[in-house]
Length: 164
Image (tube, rainbow, N blue to C red):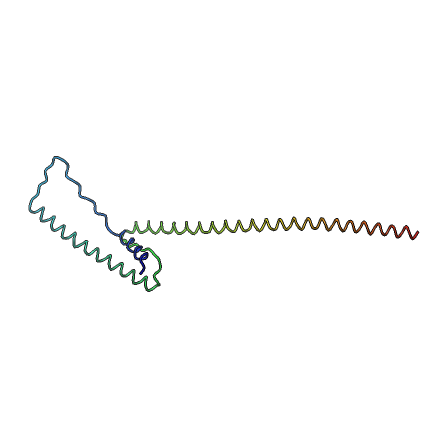
């Protein structure tokens, strides 16, 4: 898989990492009490957190491997996949993606329509120039016909005058 696709998958998987909030500090002036049970519970919590972190990393690695395998089967297309178990956040992401796609489609359609409009305006200007050229030609031809008709009429009168 190429570096760009791997980076996209890695970026998507990085979005899955949970945010760990820092514990609230003790208010100033209060002494911290440390007893053996508390330190034992902290050690157990730390060990459980470590195991959970390892399982989480293992899950992410398996997800990435599965995504890469499927992508290779379909010719390494460019895509972005987000894994989440938060249905509200997934719905928000889907809606944002749909809106982004529809916005791109609308921009592309608007661009196509503007290009079509420009083409039609150019075609209209060309037709108007052609129409004015044909109108000028028609005026010249009518003037020539009028001149010919006048000449024919004059010749007819001349023939009548000579015949009389």
